[in-house]
Length: 340
Image 1 (tube, one colour):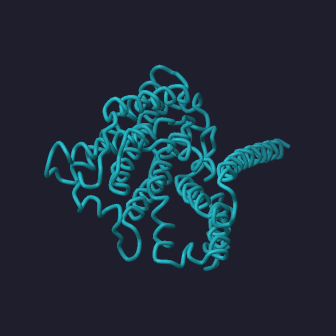
Image 2 (image 1 turned 90 degrees about the vertical axis):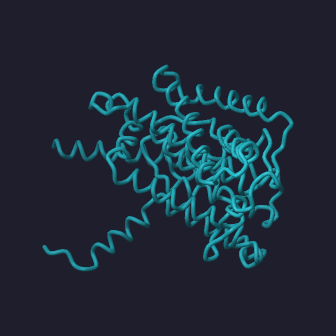
Image 3 (image 1 turned 45 degrees about the vertical axis):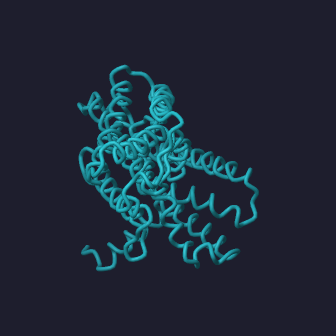
């Protein structure tokens, strides 16, 4: 039978409706509509639309890297400390090397973050110690180095060039530059994870590490790449953090690690690896920070905000478990039917 012209569009629509990311997108829209109904300035003001797009940009970058690591059945709790170190490095480069090109600072931040990620990956891959333990240790170690390095010093916006700081405040066609950078990175990561052999191997390793190794996949190399990518993206986020906020001290980036894990899990990345997308993690980051902005407008007290985020994370994990059990039962039924 020859497929009709409308069939591809119908399949695409069904795929969109059935995707886990669609429910996150709908939840995000509901939050925005509810907050805007109570206070129209949430979007319809000079800063409302800009803040809606700009606020999640840095967390999206960190969440993309975190999603790649979690898909391989690991986790990186040190990303907040990596972000803080690279943010401080960014400020020091502008102070200690006057006239240094902005591009060189970006390269330095990304490479430095990648090296810190490589340390995490090497400890996980070669020492065979759970990533949770390793990165919990490097979270404190990297933060300690940052405190030792920065001390009570603080880098201010006046220490950095104006064209660099413009990245944190500028926009193109009404879209903040930081958001555009995050979207470009997201598109590249999403394409790689979906269309390349390397991306598919991340999922295979996360689904069943032992089987992936028996199949001949280079598990150690893939784990190293995942942590290097995660560290590099945290390094990029650190450079952009300096451009966005202009003030950097030894506590920059504190708490980003939990927000990144929360964004990935809320966005549908299975905490036990093997499924999820960087698109979902990015939507999770946007939902997480939009909720934080919307709840005070909706009259929810501050102390309930973290509780709501915690409930979202628990709900996402429970939903993943239910979907995994349902899929497992369906596969068993299909196997039994095939043998009858």
